[in-house]
Image (cartoon, rainbow, N blue to C red):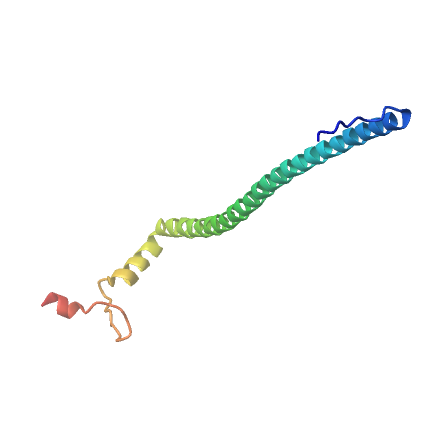
Length: 132
């Protein structure tokens, strides 16, 4: 029971076969283009993702550096103010009258004819207890 199948070889079947080949070729071309476009899209998405992450990291580090800059500028401003105060104090310490008054105030020294009285709210040391 074997049958032999033969195709009809006329113009119509040849035309249909050629049409099928063209359709298969164009279908194959479309699938290849779709795959390439999909691959290109995936690559572009990965590239944009990497660049986006880098931009976010750079933005974060920039914000951190700006905060540090503000803090350092404030500390520099405080240091400059302290330096100016110290320069004024140094220039005052070169003045003999100011230096004598400062030593008498700070260390409770007195001139020959002066007597120093310590009040309870003063932070002066009790000299009578120290002598005992």
